[in-house]
Every structure is written in C-alpha cells, then in structure tokens.
Image 1 (cartoon, rainbow, N blue to C red):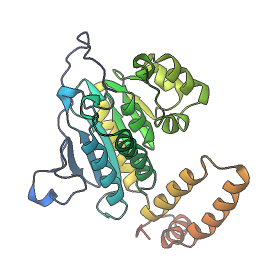
Image 2: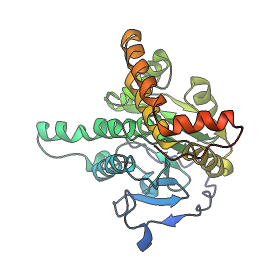
Image 3: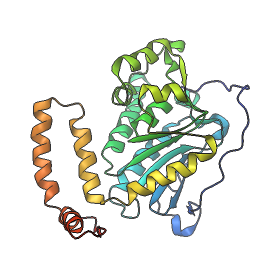
Image 4: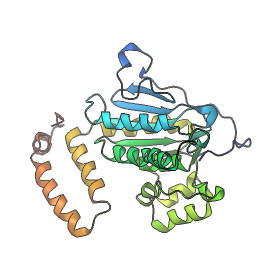
Length: 292
C-alpha cells in the first residue's frame, strides 16, 4: 500500500551510482530483469543490483514489477555470473512504499484473487533462488515493501529508514507479508506492527532483530557491496544447498527438520567444494572453489 509523500523528510542526495554494467548496455541485455518496466539492473562484479525504479511513486510495486522480480529470482539460480542479489530503491525517499493500489483495480473478484497470487509466488521464488539476497533499505519501507525487504536473506538499513505495515489504517490487513515478517522477528512484534499500523525507525527495527547492518545513509552502498561480495565469494553449491535447507526447516517441526538436515549433511559433504575446503584447511591454504 503506497503512503502519501511526507514533505518533512529532508531531500538528501541519493548515493552515487555504483560501478558495474548498466542494463542499457548491449553486454548486459541478457541480465535477469533487463528491460522490465519499473526495474533497473546492473551487474557489479558477481552482485546483481536490482533497483525498484519508480522514485516519483516512492518505488511502489506494480503487477509488472512483481512478476518481473519473480522472473529474476527464477533465473539467478542457474546464472553463474550472479553470486548475490541486492534489492534497493531508486532515489532518496523510499526503498518501497508498498503496492501501487491505483494500478491494481479492475477485473472480477476471481481475477483479482489470481493476480494477488503473484506476491506469494515472488516470495517463494526468492527463497528458492539458491542465491544470497540482500535488501538495501533507506527511507520508507512500508506494507508490501516491508514484506519484500524481509523476504530477503539479510537486510542492510540506512539510519533514515522507516518501517511499517499501515494496512489496518485503510481497512486492510497485511495477510501475505505475514510470512516474511514472522520469519524475521518475534511473532508478537510482528503482530503489534500489523495491529497498530505504527511506523518504527531504523534503531527500533534493529532492536526488533531483522536488521543485519545499520549504517549511515552515505555508507549504505559500500556496506551492502562489502556484504554481497563476501557472500558471492562463498562456494555456490554449498550456499545454494544451505539456503534451501534453511528455508525448508525454518517452519518445520524439530523431528522433520533434523531428518532433512541429516540427509543434507551427507549430500553436502559429498560436494567437490566440501572436499576442497577440508583439504585447504589441513594444508593451511586458501580454498579454490569450483562451485560444485
């Protein structure tokens, strides 16, 4: 749900554009997400930066953006160029203010119900991507935008960020984003936000427990880049299987989780990179990851 612009927010300059390959270059035309309206992509090293690119609308989500993001996350698992994905918002006012409700009306009740299934499908694609995901958040991160950020593995937050689920104030409930919220903070914290619709600043978000890094605005890009680079240098096969296991067991019973994890331990230990990592440790050298 998009929020009205707050004129009291200072108009600080946005961080400078990062180095990397812009999506408009011919060499980047086949990047996941290239050419999708409302999204901008660039490959910086092995980090795919995906920018919600509607700053005048505070990067509110359209159906096309949601389906485009889903396509990106479906593709990155098999794209060996990409070792990490960063989601961020254009401009200096918002990561994402939620869904663009003005463009999400019309159609029968059944058609609207089917369309609303795109956001759950996006979350599933993110968790199944096999690739580390980071949200780099500054400014407003509200409603579906908060759900999108918390569906990422890690959240890096600038100190001007504001989070909230204000749906209750317009007679709605944040049903779908309940899942990423409940996976990111204690349940009663999530329920309080959903019941009251109140906003929390970056410091309180950090206390809620879903912030991986809290940094100054002018450090957001560099801190996120450093984190993404470290993740993208990890053995990709090990990372993919590990993430898969985390999301498989996070909602499972202890008995089911342990059975799955025991099997995954055997599978993971059979990977070439598991052998290489152990050998490198014993030989006191840096491992040479193959990704397999």
